[in-house]
Amino acid sequence: MLQVKNITFSYQKTPVLKDLSFKVKPGDYLAIIGESGSGKSTLLKVLRGEYDLNKGHVFWKENEILGPKHNLVIGYDFIKYVAQEFELEPFISVAENIGQHLSNFYKEEKKERVAELLEIVELTAFAKTKVKTLSGGQKQRVALARALAKQPEIILLDEPFSHIDNFKKQNLRRNVFSYLKKQNISCIVATHDKDDVLGYADNMIVLNNNKIEAQNTPEQLYKKPQTPLVASFFGEFNIIDNNIVYAHQLKMVAQSALKVIVKNSYFKGHYYLIEADLDGEKVFFESSEKIIQNTEIYLEAIT
Ligand code: ADP
Ligand code: MG
Image (spheres, protein in one colour):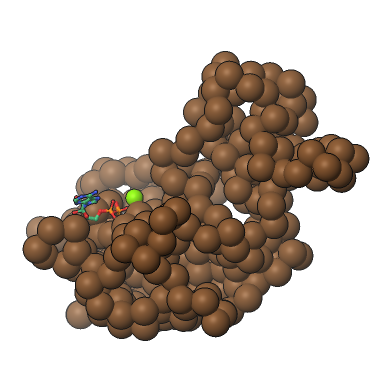
């Protein structure tokens, strides 16, 4: 179990992380979300022992994770970390990059392991390609496979699918998260993409103003977002009578106290997102059909 106890960290004077506490069980996936600059990357770096804390403690099982003041070499074998700006060896092949830190003593095992990881990140066809010729998304997949190579107990991923195109993303997420679950590897993922979280994460932390603004399962946070920031992570929402109401929770009715005037219809695939005006405020709701501008509509919140 990873235990984070009241940690505070600052680069300079003002803390970037203030009094954070949470736990991650073996095999569990914790998502860290928050706006850009909220400290997600900093938190991951602190968890791998890249910095010394101002206050607090981090433990993985019985080992305390300590920073450079206490360790000559940064990091621990049981924790692997893939940075937002990942580093690879550009002049050797994809397969060589993935297997770089695996022992050459067991040649067959090494070959099989690399083949397995190539499958997971869907780069089998690129095994012999030199990394420098790959696209950003392909490099990101190599970095992921390389971090998994030595079977860490916990893996920290910083926006792991950010460079990967939508055609590949869905499959890759399924491959990676089901592999981690199967191997009982804990993972902590910093992301601002809800698709990295929903359906996969066991728990979720929302960082804001250097603190944890919310912490729960994705399902609970989705169903009962306590703050607009939490709701905004999941989709378009409105604040009506001081309640957070998602766009899909507003239904068109024949008559109600919520009269709006349609301003725009945005095609979203299986629905249209409708932007409307309610006494000078923007309101968003969903409709199966496009609605002509300036149409008057009555809405009702169904929560
Ligand atoms: P996120 O990953 O959520 O976008 P970061 O952890 O990168 O956020 O940054 C959090 C805050 O810490 C920002 O205000 C950023 O400018 C600052 N910061 C990040 N890295 C450094 C650094 N090496 N030195 C000083 N300040 C930093
Ligand atoms: Mg970041």
